[in-house]
Image 1: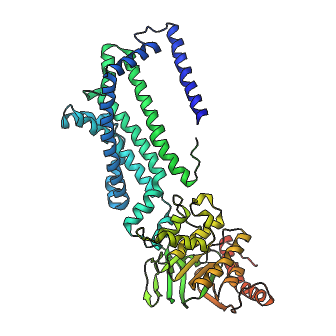
Image 2: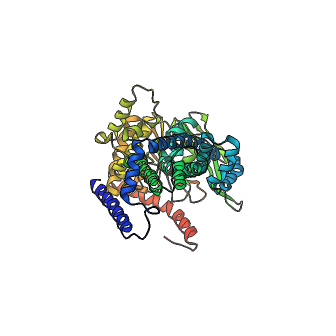
Image 3: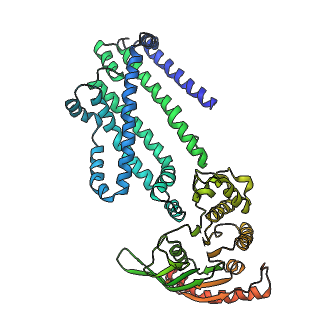
Amino acid sequence: MSGIFYKRLATIIALVLVWQLFCKTAMYPTYLLPTPEQVEQTLLQGIIDGQLVIALLSSLKRMVIGYSMAVVLGLALGVALIKWKYLDQTIGFFILAVQTIPSVAWLPLALIWFGLNERAIIFVVIIGSLWTMVMSVKTAIKGVNPDYIRLAKTLGYNKWALFWKIVIPAALPELIVGLRLAWAFAWRSLLAGELLGGESGLGQTLMIGRNLGDMSLVIAVMIIIATLGILIDLFLFQRLENQIFAKRGYSSKR
Amino acid sequence: MLQLRNVKKEFIDKSGKKLPVIDNVTISIRQGEFVSFLGPSGCGKTTLINIIAGLVTTSSGTVLVNGKTINSPGLDRAVVFQDSCLLPWLTVRENVGMALNSDNSGKEKICDYYIDMVKLNRFKSAYPHQLSGGMKQRVALARALATDSPVLLMDEPFSALDEQTRMLLQNELMQIWQRTNKTIVFVTHNIREAIFLSDRVLLLSHHPAKIISEIAIPDIRPRVGGEHFFNMEAEILLHLKREIEKATEEELGERYIL
């Protein structure tokens, strides 16, 4: 663990040094490519005066609302599609088609329907991550070892117990993959939504940076996004995954 | 106790052709009896035990447990599958307790009692991936016993184990059977195993499965070697030879003489 930590740290330092070097060669003017120090300044400033913190919080709020709704809806819809074949043959096909539409393409509709506000962006976040979630739930449940189901039947499990005690835990490793994917899709949708139609949030801050020609602000926001992504992955998804995999004896080392 | 009356099973293959798997099997098994189904691999013995378990429906004929027709799985017939089929996210104790109600206050005690019976005391809190094949099968046995069902259906439970582990488990199964007085239906393709364990061995023909012979084993236990059992083995092999030839011929597509 600690070994990996130092390797990762070294990689980041090396990247910053390369960046620094690039700036020193003066191939690009600093208003196009700001130096690491400038970005650091902007980051600190933004955190102290609250601009970046407020943006981050309002983005996170939308993310949490949109993502959790997508997860709940995705679970319900995925289970329904498994349960009723007829639904899968009709709506299931439709989902496959809808999945190919990038989530930003929903934004014009959302803006007309909900207006320039929270709900429009949350809608885009949900739409952006829902279909992946549905498909993941479907594959996860389909992949459950049929022997477990036979076993549960011989042990007198009713449908409810079968679902909650056998199907869901058996599908969990696959479900985590789905949750992770949906999280990534939700982020992309959120940023796209905020860039074009937000009043606040990280996406909007990016846009402000562009409008003011403040590239160090743009890069600062990008760093915040990447850091957040890594933190969520390390402390939420990987922890969950490790816990689930360790129990089952799969190696969780990558 | 357990009766099969004119049980037939046909599968329908992709081209719509009927494929008879079990042909008119009638069996009657006494309470507390140990009966083995012995036949070449792929002969339909597993289908037959699945029918008794209620996991597969019959095409015609009935299965009765204590005079009641059954058509679905139930807690009156516990099953031990060929691969132990333990849930990897549950500990040994939790696996054994799968059939028990979670609000059963004595649950832990019951589980420990059966874990003790299969001698896995030291592994109560272990997860399945930490166990050997033999241990896993012990857990599966304990889980089946914990249902407290009078009938135990065992589908080649020891066939994936090495010889020594198998011998051990056969011995223990014997003791557990004598202790608990369960009715056991045991599927195997191992002649020695069938003779060693059973009161009665039913020989099944190859595809469709039919009972071709019924051999009662004299009630001398423990069964350790002896000319008598050796002769019995030879006799059963003679019976089965033609079926094994048939099975092999079907597989290889040419005449085969053993």
